[in-house]
Amino acid sequence: MSTVYALLFIVATVVLVVGLARKIVQYAKTPAPLKIPTTPAPVTQSGVVMRMFREVVFFESLFKSTKWTWIFGWLFHMALFVVLLRHLRYFMDPVWLPIQLIQPIGVYAGFAMLIGLAGLLARRIFVDRVRYISAPSDYLWLLVLLFIGISGLMMKFVAHTDIVMVKQFFTGLMGFSIGTLPIDLPLIIHLSLVLVLMILFPFSKLLHVPGIFFSPTRNQVDNPREKRHLADWAKAMEE
Image (spheres, rainbow, N blue to C red):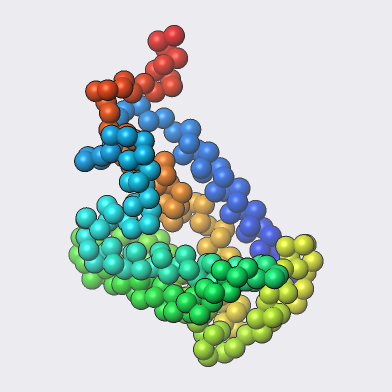
């Protein structure tokens, strides 16, 4: 069992890293032939940086669009960020001080993540216009993330897992040494769903994470009168 999961995590990591890199290169090479920033837009590059910061950290456009979706979406993403930071302890020895300090907060973040996901799932089920445009994969991803969170909290509060062995397994795996993984049902469910998420993430809608940085409606300066916008392919035709 340990060897199977070790091999699966190696494959999943390769798929995740290569898939993300490939998609980011594709985003970077996609031409933006027109000046299309969503107005009101910043007129300087520093203004664009601040706009992207507000968008990434505070989900500004979502806040202006719908408050309920913003509440649950922001809660889920921020909680997930803290939970991921908390999980870094399984991949480092000794554990950095900031990661040690975040451990108690990470437990509460796990509950906050579930509340955010439950709200987003309820929105897809009970809001008519959202349900109409929802695909089966939209529900699937929310359920996968929900069960990852539930199984993770079960290991903390219901069926305790030997986290020392889990840490030895993953730190050993980073050196291509396969250790022993505890065989606990919540852990197996948790790790199996994480594997599914890692393998399918580069090919799913969840890829909006890096995609936002390449959105021309967000990363362009609103200066069409001051500076002519000329795409690379059009510039080559003029030369």
